[in-house]
Length: 153
Image 1 (cartoon, rainbow, N blue to C red):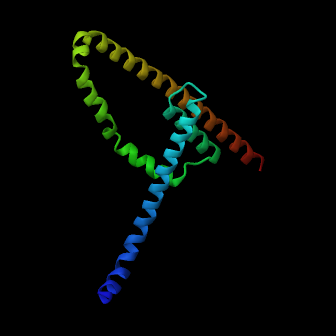
Image 2: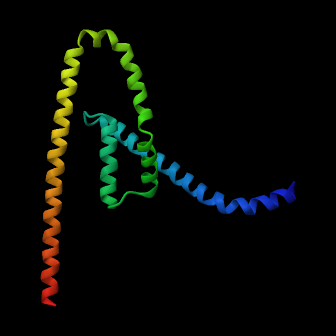
Image 3: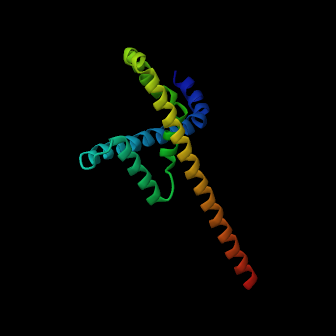
C-alpha cells in the first residue's frame, strides 16, 4: 500500500495543487461575500434599506478603496453570476401560490410589468449613453494632453 501511494502522490500533486489553490480562493471569496452581507445586516439596523443592498454598497466601497477587485471575490462572484438562474427558481415557484390573485388582476400586473421594463430600459440607455460620452471626452482630453506634452519635448 505504501509503495502504491508513493507512486501515485507525486503524479497527482502537480494537478492537485492548482485546484486546491483555486478552492482556497473560492472559499475565501464566499467568506468575503458573507462578511459583506453581515455588514449589511448590521447597517440595516441603522439605515432603512435591505441588508443585501447595504452589503453590496459596502463591498463596492471596499473595492473602490482597494482600487481593484480581490481575486478571491472575483472568482466567487463569477461562479454566482454564472449560476444566477438557480436563484430565481424559488420566486418562479412562489408565483404558483398566487395564481388566484394573478388571475383577478392579470391586466394590472401585465401593465405594471410592461411599464417598469420600459422605464428600466430607458434609464439604463440614458445612463450608459452619458457614461460613454463622458469616457470619450476624458480619453480625448488625455490624448490631447499627451500630444501637447510630446510636442513640447
